[in-house]
Amino acid sequence: MGNATRIDIADGILTLTLARPEKLNAYNPEMHGEMIAAFDRADADDDVRAVIVTGEGRAYCAGADLSAGGATFDYGGGSEWRSEETPVAADGSVDYSHPAIRDGGGLLALRIFASKKPVIGAINGAAVGVGVTMTLPMDVRIASDTARFGFVFARRGIVPEAASSWFLPRIVGISNALDLCFSGRIIGAEEARGIGLVRSVHAGDDLLPAARAIAKSYVEGTAPVSIALTRSMLWHMLGAPHPMEGHRLDSRAIWSRGASADAREGVESFLEKRAATFPDRVSRDMPHFSPWMDDPAW
Image (tube, rainbow, N blue to C red; front, side):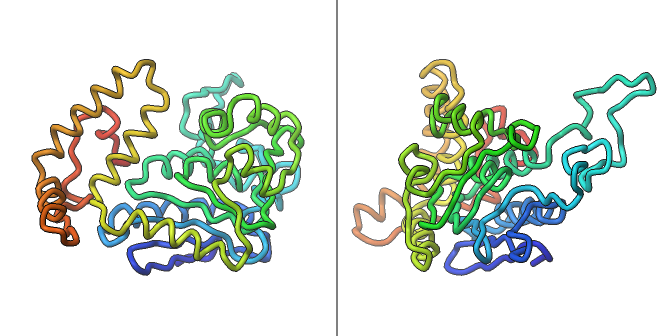
């Protein structure tokens, strides 16, 4: 538990609540660090099988904390995100490969992308700017009927962040993605559902129970390593140039997992008409047969 978020774990589900309701859960460096730490914790705990992210109060996340005023997005100047290191050389040139350049929202999005556990966004209210882009690498987004969404970057003189230039067109299509970002307009939950930004819309009191029901459907009767691998395989193949890439990856995964204790248990429990008890654990039994699996996040 931190000052900007709250964590609850029950029934194999970690619920991460953005907890700055007096600021409409505006995103700041403290929330950023706590969210990344929560995903690290979820991945390290074999008893956590799924993650739900939601907000406290009437907003999910109203975007970046703008308390720094006009310097909010000046990461090399007056922003609270300013790094002690600088990518600017003495001659005024900028090293765009320098770590200090990296967007904080993007670091969070990539951490969620690398999650070994399914991630469900339960969007209970306004989700604007980074408040909506942080949800794009989540596997499922559901919304309350009072939720509102806005890709307002052009209205703030900046551009979409949190790797949303990669995620958003894949979720809603390029035309919808451009329309949302060009206009910066705020859309309601039903329009968001219509373009595929969210899966379903619920009355406020029903939102978290619906998210938990989805999470439980992923947790009950499934093998944790299978879920972790499947999540990674499907996300990574979004950018593959040919189905042969998928075939190579599927073949390696089937070869690896087909000889596992989980596969034996899955078949035997089915034949014996009993509930499966899968022995393999994400923390120790994940195979490594693709380049991204050598990343420290994995």
